[in-house]
Amino acid sequence: MSRLKSFYKTLQFDRAGFLDTILDALPEAVIVIGIDAKIIAVNPAGLEMLGVSSLADLPKGGLLSLIAQNSIVTFQCHFDRIAAGEPHAADQHLLVDVQTKGGMHRAVECQMVPLKSRDGLVEGVICTGRDVTKREVNLQPLTDNAALLSAILETVPDAMVVIDEHGLITSCSATAEMLFGYSARELLGKNVSLLMPKPYSSAHDGYIRRYRDTGEKRIIGNGRTIEGRRKDGSIFPIALSIGEARTNSHRAFTGFIHDLTEKNEAEARLQEVQAELLHASRLSAAGTLASALAHELNQPLTAIANYVATGRDLAVQALPENSAIIQEALGEAAKEALRAGQIIRRMRDFVSKGELQLQILRLSELIDDATTLGLMGAREKGVSWSIEIEPGVDQVMADRVQVRQVMVNLIRNAIEAMEGQPTRLLTIAARPHGVDMMEIMVADTGHGISEEMQDQLFLPFISTKARGMGLGLSICRTIVEAHGGQMTVEAGANGGATFKFTLLCPPKETPYGD
Picture: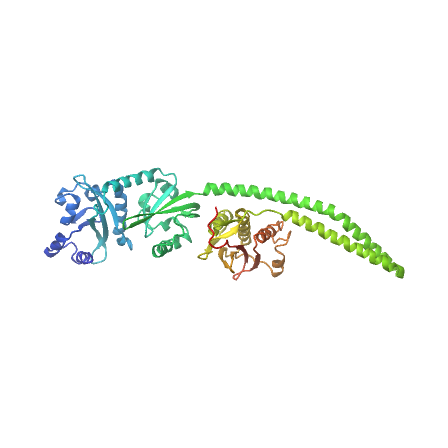
């Protein structure tokens, strides 16, 4: 076929006798189509495949009138890509359902290449086709399946997009057209990255290529939360589930897409209400704790004051006989001080006591859950972010709700810290730490934290915020330490702050939990 293309490029439709001989002998159908989609020439194998004896026998609708309804849009879109000279479009093979003039159905595998003039302008398209009906075993199931797919695409409630192994869209549901704002004609034959913002769009082809090369499934069969991009450029959250299908030498990937905008907005409103309730609860708890501490500590502190005052008065007199009394008074003051310390310890144990619901969780899912809530509205504030999870890092022992609380708090703190900054980049990363731990990092490019404040930041009632209570990071560290991990903060390499905390890995060869 490469020689045939060279002949056409050189001869520009010159029907020389030796070229006719080559075309007549080819077992494959060869059809030359003009830019206006009209058939210019066809070899005998092509006439036979179409069920006609000459060009004059073709229906008035031309070639498209012989392509079954379920294949017309795909064929037309690919033809338009070839005619437009789109790079790499000629590498794609199409499986088309051809309905001959006599009513027979044939499965045809075809490929198109541009027909160019000496000046390099596309003047037409050469389409080669091979009848693979026998290879497909039975054309009727193919036709039925195509009709079934067409019906599914018209009625499936969630958006559905089907791509080939090169990432090109081969079909999409009516819901997908409405969700993304594109018509099927605008989507078919385009790379699916068109529907994604960065960083997802730039990384997608690499994911497919790695899967083709290694067979390692990272996304297929697993749902994940990412972002989609509409035709008008707006970004919105989506839940994506991907499945794979293979038919002989062809491979396709089906993506089911659910718009999470309303769900996330409802969750955000719920989070705001919960935050207000938690704030009120903390104020109430702080008041109750202060009242209880005042009541419990009043007696030992009063006793300490009395004993110390007595010792002071006796010491002023400087009488030898007062020495024993002063020692006794100071001893009693020391006992009362220890009693006060025990009261404070009991209070602390009471406040921090709680049971963890530890289970084996996928770290990637934890991060997805946390970013869904924590990054709400971040893009509107000019914040960009990246998520970097090292290969093989995907299992931790954790309480889902409490660890999510830690991550959401760190993410929201980072976003607030970057307000007004020229660069607003949030980095979330995970990597192995030691033998049996995982380290999660949340780094920002905000105003940073002084060395003095770094030492105090996790203490209760210490805050860098004008209206902060200073309990968030203290609670976060308590949660991490209850998990057997540690939480630290340090200055970022490019400014800002970097928070790190560790979680335990599950025992080896232990299956995933829920």
